[in-house]
Image: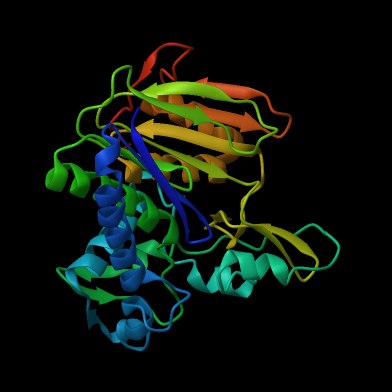
Length: 313
């Protein structure tokens, strides 16, 4: 029987699993440390985070710490892999839609009836306007970085790697459904329940050693703003919530950053995500509004071991 631990962070549940119960507390300490460092670097809800402290200087260029520079670089990689479907420059859009504080407080403040949002004309991709040379970061004044999604995935990857490097044990780290593993898997592999909400169709899959997974959802992190129903995955073309074609999109890949990039982009692309995933060999599981499931790229049937494709298409 392995060791586990869980705790709340960033409005979601963080959890870990290690094969040796005696290592769980030390592994949790290391994972908490990684999460704290990333929160210090890039939280947009804390005025004392490095990103928010540098904000007034970014239009003329500012020297970022190695960690913040790495987080921005990872976000720009995700934008490039997805053709801009995942764009880290939507901070002002999030704020204008009412997501300007922790999601639990946003939901508490929600009210009003739901109406339909109209789509404005398409915009110039913001991520292409971000410049990162070494550690010098430049962001135009009209844009604001929001690294939340990719930073969470990077945190899972870094935390899993750190525990294995420091303690030599296999570990699974889950941050609200963003999962990374490192080191040897337990006998039978890492068993993961793939299900967004309790009423959604579920599947148990087996992750092999070093594999990662991420789920993006239009059912969670929801609120109302000025009578409109909102969710947190924005279509960068318009700066508005993506059409909820899919309840959830789950992707397996070699890193959590890759998995998160493609699962988020799958929500943004809507129906077109299926053919895109198939062309790229992306192992995906997409659940539509009616609960129907579409799988792509070798997503496993029962009892198959899931291995993600390292695709940067």
